[in-house]
Image (cartoon, rainbow, N blue to C red; front, side, top):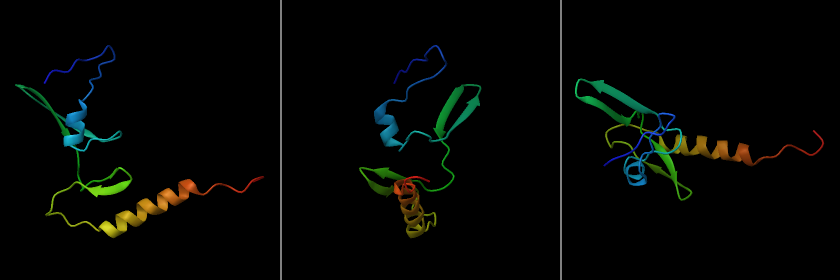
Length: 90
């Protein structure tokens, strides 16, 4: 698959690849360089919960322990905090 580098040194990762590897804005990538070239790969240290059509979806390995309920609670609290507006006049 060919991609081009723009004048600022950026490349666009095709949508099919982003979807396959669950890459969303803000995803960290790891750049490995060797004598044959370089490789980009997701730098996921922990299992990833991403929002897909409004639902949190786990995209990690089955062998890693994760407290899904705690992650959902953290996400819910974050969203509630974003929705709560300050009282008028404050």
